[in-house]
Length: 293
Length: 326
Image (spheres, chains in turn cyan, brown):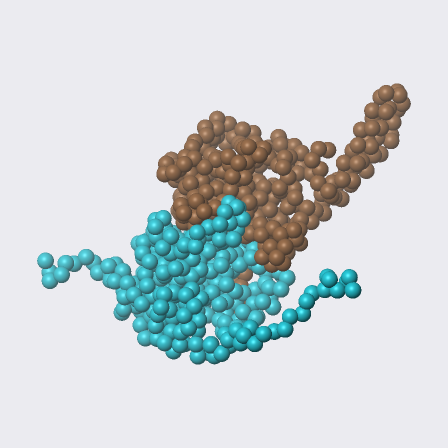
C-alpha cells in the first residue's frame, strides 16, 4: 500500500552490533576498573587510587571528594574538623530545594559542600577548607559561606596559615541573594586576615567557577591549580552563546589561566603536598640565615 | 502612556478614555467636569490596585523597562559639578562603568555606577552595562582614590551581570570581581550603594559592598538572572517569570533578609514616569544616610560594613538545632 512507503523499515539487529552494545559492561566491571574520561584508558581502580587518582597514561586528574583530598594532603590524613554541624536551611522555600538537599546528603555522605578544620601539612599547622563537588556541585550557599568565613576567622585568631581547595559550580541558586552575599562575607573576612599578615594559599581544583572563583578562591597570596582544572567566572556554554563562537579545547584550563597571568603555578597532584610544605616553610621562620651567617 | 507593560494596559486604556473625553468636551464645548473627575478618581484607584500588588515578575519587567533611567540620567540631578573620569590605567576605559567626582549638597564624593546604553549603538559600546575586568578595575581605581582623599563613595548598581566573554575570562573576570569585594570591605570612608535597576550576580556585587545598600522600589537583585535560573532549573529560559517569583528578588524580599537597609519609593508606574521626582528621592535618601555615616571614624566604618555582611546567611547549627544568625 501507499501508506507503507512512509513506514519505518524494521531492520534486524546484527550480532556484531549486539556485541558492541554490551561491550562496555564487560570491559568495566563495577568498582574494579575506571575509564579515563580524557584518553579512554581503562585503569584498575586499585592502581588509580595508588596513583592519587591520576591517569597513568595521560595524567588526567580525576575529581576528588573532600575526604579523599584530606587523606592525601594532611599529615597522617588527620583533620580536626570544625563547624561540622552547620546545615543548610531553605530560607526562600525554593521549589525542590529541601528535597534536593536531603538527596545530596545521602549520596555524598557530607552535610554540605565544604569540610573545614585544622591539621598539619609537612609538620606545619594550618587551617584548611576542602570543597567537594559531589555535594550540590560544590555550590556556595549560606553554610559554605559561613564555614569558609569561620575558618578564616579561626586562622586570623590563631595566626595560622589558611589553605583552601576549591571546586564549585558557583553560588547556590536556591538561596539566591543570600548565596550572593557569601561572596562579600568571605572576601571581607579574608581582607581582614590578610591585612593582619595572614598567609592564604588558594588551590583551584576541577572545576571552580562563578561565585567561588569570583570571591575567596581568587584572593590567595598564592593561587595554585591542579593540571587541567577548569577555572573561570562564566561557564563555557554561556560564553559560547554570548560570543557566538566555539571556544578552543584548552579554554579556562589551569594551563590557559597560567598563560594569561591568573595563576602562580600549576602543581601536579603528586607534588602538591611537597609544594605546599615548601611554601609554608618560606613563611615559617623569622628569616635567619643557614648556619648563623 | 508610552511604553506600557502588559499589566499596565487597563490604566493606559482608561487614560485614553479620559483624554478623549476631555478633547471631545473642548471641541463640542460640553462640560464633562464631573464625569472626568469621576474617571480620574477611578484611575487613581486602579493605579493603587495595580502598582500596589505587583508580582515579582511584573517588578522584573519594570526594572528592565527600556526607558528606565540609568546612572548617567541620575548623576546630573542628584549631584552637582560632576567630573567624569576614565580608564583603569592597565588596559582600557570600559564604558559599562561610569564614574568620577561630584558634589552631593556641596560635599565632594566619588560616584561610580554601571551604565547601560540608551540605544543599540550605545549599548554595543557599553556592552549592555556588563563590565569586563577593566570595568571593575576602573571602578576600583576610583574608589581607592576616594579612600585616599577621604571622600565618601556612592555607587549605582544596574547590570545584568559581568560580561560573559572569552576576553573577559583571559583578563581575570573572577579576580577583578573578587578584588573589588576584598578592597571595598576595608575602605575607611562611607560607602552607600543604590540598586537602581537590575542587580545581577557578582557583576552587581562588585559595586555593592557598602555600609548601606538601598534599593529602588522596582529594582531587583539576585544571584543569577531569572532567565538563567529558569534555563538551569527547568531547561527553559522563557520561564523567567516563574523563576522571578521563586528567587525572591524584589526590594521587599531583600529588606526582609536584612540584605538592604531601605527601599526608595518610585513614582506610580516606575522611575521612568518621573525622573526628576525619582532623582530627588534618591538624593534625599543618600543625604540622610551620608549624614549618619559621616559621623563615624574610618575604623567604625570598616567594622560597621564588616558586621553588615558578616551576619548574612541562614543555616541551622545541629545538633543543638539552634537557628543561625540572620
